[in-house]
Length: 329
Image (cartoon, rainbow, N blue to C red; front, side, top):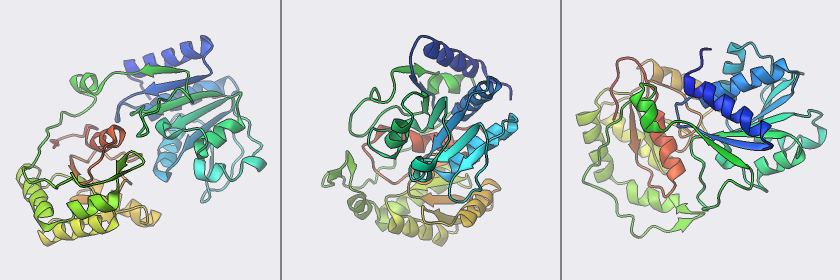
């Protein structure tokens, strides 16, 4: 892989931070900036020195992405996840939900732990329990959004922050797509919604958003501003998603739901159909907000109100990866 200049600079900055005595480093880079490329190269360099590396992720899509990048670089690795056969290797990609159950029988002792989507790492949760198991390992966290709904900083887990170029910088250099924003005049009444854990209660948000007038308005604006563009619609809950998908299909627009309950084989087929233009709209609840790398996405339809800046940026970031011959909305 040919690294971009800012990716090479990030690797240099991370090395300098470790050499300066920091044991835990956090890298912030916008969605689409190539965080996986950066840490895959760091893993390659570490294995050349005989180091052991553990990569922590929380979704199958992230496992597949990391594995593909490491394979491209010729880095031998194993995967710690229920549906994968164990393999002895210096590098392991681990599902946090699987690894946390195997800590007592896990002989692997990583010199470096890489935490993908590191904003999830909090003391006491599954990420924190895993990191506590190897207190002497170096840590590198990567995230597009180093912020949390509870307002707490990331200093509990990381000692220093390295910031890559901004969305504006990457857009100006042609590494991210230029986006246009549209705000239809018909909006839901959010004034009576309550909050839990720092964000709107999604059952209440679903009741406020799942209305024919709102969904119909969304479809009208999609047809007006983004007709035929591959779109992802972010909804509040399963019923909301199913109703929105049905409304799109009723309007003659091919649409399917992609949910947490969607079986892996069906999920892959849906993404392939979407990437090849056989499906115009994917309707989802959170599944596509992280770990979804499909440059074909050209339109984000935000039907889930949120107080989370991180969630908003993750959703919008799905449409920023450049692809040939497409415009964005």
